Image 1: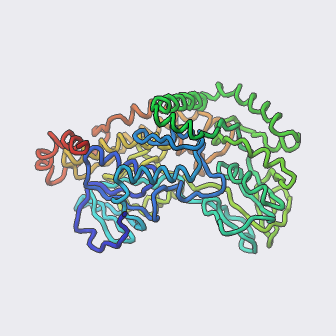
Image 2: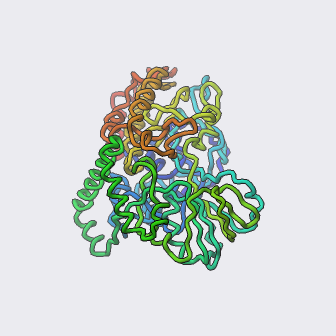
Length: 519
């Protein structure tokens, strides 16, 4: 059973690494560290179970838009998926099974939330204050993910609403939607999944759409027991499936980097809409006015049918005001409703972890990011934040599996953690010039991608129009950059025990540790 008790003497031990979060990134970090024989680490999780976003998001229809074969760890393939695209309950079960089978679950301290992380310059340590006490660690890995802080816009008069109201990420399963007049605000990735599930329950369903998204058919299918047994018996099936999916996503990524190649897809998708949406007025309302890929591409087979149901109406305008139980759109349309469900996504440009981390200059990261968005080197290392690594940080987003991206970053991070340990490095920070030149080059090459030049305003862009999310090159290029942790990119200060630790560790540590891990 995982450790959940309060530990008042946590500061007596100094960890080599401290992992914050037990979602897809945190679990992968712990497993990969353990595989290399790196054992002096701690992992905490604020909730009572693993899973991250797949634990938090339980709305009806919640699932992944990347096929299961690729949305799974490379070191832990599964033959249990019931669909080509897995649903939330199965993904959560998968993550829990992985944490158990790799022996990580007992090492996680659940119900323990990071409150403040401060770099101590004198001791060259991170002091991590949590709800269970203070910990000390030489390095820290922030594996809290980019999709954590649900976002509800500031709407005039919202406080006057007397009905039920909740965000899709905090779904109220105790509230019965049957026969209710429901307003859904937003038409993003979550909304297109839960709208078809709640439409049959509602007496009236009103969907507020500020910007029409691209919604393409989802090539999904169920996998019966015979299929699962075949996948389990013949691993080559899943390996081939995984490679095929990766190859398809590489083609999509090429188009996102070279928007001219997507022009035929834009035309074809608009022609497809003529078959999917019969009513000309509705079809015009759901036709995007930007290039495909500028915003996140969505996949669904039941969203457009739900919009065309007799009890559904689409308002092609954003919600701007609430008067009691009347919701009012920017175009003046009004609806009386019993329930408001927010499908308004997450604040990804201001990661919540920034509110808790204080860098070497004594600055809270959230304060530095307040009027802009985060910058990092390879989405991993933040300026003036020593011995700290971020997973799925700024400008590493490629149209692919978040799990595959996290694994690529972890190869880099774990190489860095071992170099810190083996060489007795006391303080390691990304060189400011390296960081600046890297981000200047990233931003330069993003200008011609569909994210920046596709004619939309998406969550890839911060309030200043700067793209803080996307990687402008291929996944292969990202993996090459992350293949080896180059100390020359960092400002390095060796610790007091550097010579001792280097002598003891450097020659044999990783090789011997791996042998022990295998045995």
